[in-house]
Image (tube, rainbow, N blue to C red; front, side):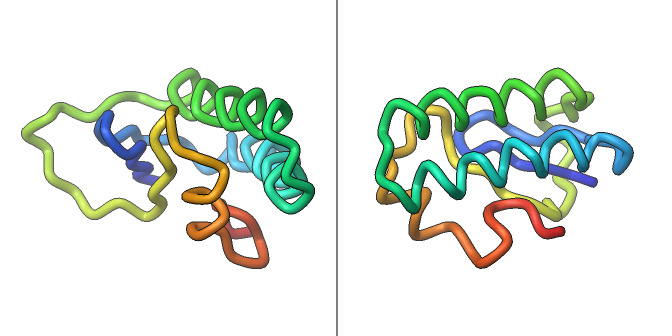
Length: 92
């Protein structure tokens, strides 16, 4: 799966890591829904770190369609709330 982190670029993440990322996504969804800013910050950071850690960065000149777009590390709770759907940021 090709994931874009807004403001950073694209990363290729193997599907085998989606379960771990979905767990963080569920925690992020709960933090956003409750308006818990500290939990939101902590979980967004962990989710993005997970994508970076599990993934392989693509070269800047490799323009591939992103299957998933994640917010920038400094995104506000309100911005992420607008990006969420019923499943969170990551489908599944």
